[in-house]
Amino acid sequence: MENVKENRLQYDLWNTVERLGLRQEGLICWLKFNLVVVPRSFTLFVKASTTIKKHREFMGLCNTMCEDGKCMDSLYKSVRKTRDMYMQIVPMLEEIPYRMKGLVLGMYRHSLNEWDDLVEDCLLSSDTEIRSLVNSIAAAA
Image (cartoon, rainbow, N blue to C red; front, side, top):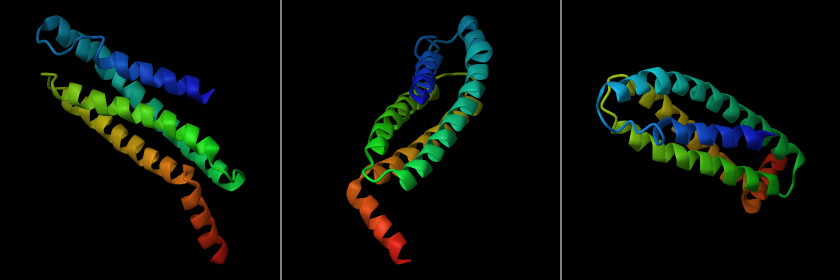
């Protein structure tokens, strides 16, 4: 079920900038940006924060119940894909010539940082050597 939400989030991310063709100037593009992209960006920011929170909860469950880390490997791949989409969208937003882009760009940069941190955490959790080292340190303490 989480993959469906994440894929929807990825689709919304891509649709926000690329399909609307906001790189030109003009009244139509300005209206599209202010009436479509800005409200959608707030929605995506909330969705991304919720999704990241759920992924972190899943990571906590996986670390206590799972020993091999295969579930973290699949989570890492999907989280990395979402982070890569954010990395593509942020430079596109920097090219938009409107004043409200600062607010939208700030939300996307914050989300990009959160997804980047989650990717690093998933990568560390999916590596079996690191997991065994952390478990041995935790057992010794």
